[in-house]
Amino acid sequence: MLNHSLIKKYEDLNFAPYAMKSYASKGRVHKELLHAYRSAYQRDRDRIIHSAAFRRLEYKTQVFVNHEGDYYRTRLTHTLEVAQIARTIAFALRLNFDLAEAISLAHDLGHTAFGHSGEDALNELMQGAGGFNHNSHGLRVVDQLEERYPDFPGINLSWEVREGIVKHSTPFDKTETSGEFSSREMPTIETQVVDIADEIAYDNHDLDDGLTSGLLKFSDLEKLPIWNNICKKISKKYAKIDVERKKYLIIRSLIDIQVTDLILGTENKLRSLKPKSSADIKKLGDKIVSFSPEMIALRKPLRGLLLEKLYHHYRVVRMSNKAKRFIKELFEVYVDKPQGLPTPIQKHIPDEGVKRVVCDYIAGMTDRYALDEYKKLFDPYEKV
Image (tube, rainbow, N blue to C red):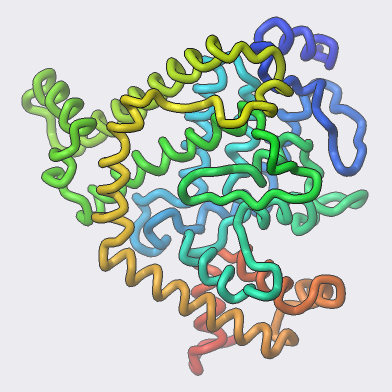
């Protein structure tokens, strides 16, 4: 049977010297015996997948609210796409792909219902009471809010996965480091892989969902060099291909060229900087995982188009504003009368305060649950 001695030998033989080895982990907040045949990060991955917060991602918004249709990505399908891309990149770079996968699966556990509009609403409502940041809340979920074990709160993940949750950084994800996670240190290289895998995943599946919804048009995208170059190659090879398959092949090719560029660009940086350990990566002044300058230039107009034509489309803006109103009204009702909260939720008020408990409760809601609660509280004909 596989054991920790063999796991160590495998990691030393197959992982790059700057990869984070599971046997070198800083450990867990609450000490536990090692599992017989799983590494620390494999165990983290499994705990995340079995958590209630992970299951709830199925009914949390990515861009389109759940009731808009079954085709669109949810926070869960997005998370799985990030994990697949991150694991592929980590494997190619000889990094700890188990760690990259675990961070990927946990990176959005702190997200609210209704996507970033829900987070913005809660942050506004929590001004003066600690605010709300979904990275910080994700750490709170895995450290405290999940109640599964008799010996400790949370799911007691390893230090490196917890750091990956807090230091997850993209244009949509801002870090709030403090205490045990130093803002002066770079995150592990595996965390950096997850950050870019997240960007690749949401850029490309938002394109897919935007086209399917009709909010984006092929004519919009044909103006972009990165899209047009791939489109021409596919049209030349498959002259009679239907629109749906053509869309799929273009999205697939977009992901492939970005992942390939990222791997090659990062390898070039690694050869130049020559880090000898995971500690060397953390001492660098900037992230080492990055695209080539040419790919950055190609991606920029694509991301600008998504912002202008999809994220700022009037239908998406309407959904966002509506969601903020739901969150605000739920928050105010619960804070005004916390006795209306479920009994298991009320028990935390003496320790955490009313606003933080209400914030935790709302942040944990799915789109569907939030809408059901809204109907129960504001529709006079709905049973409570």
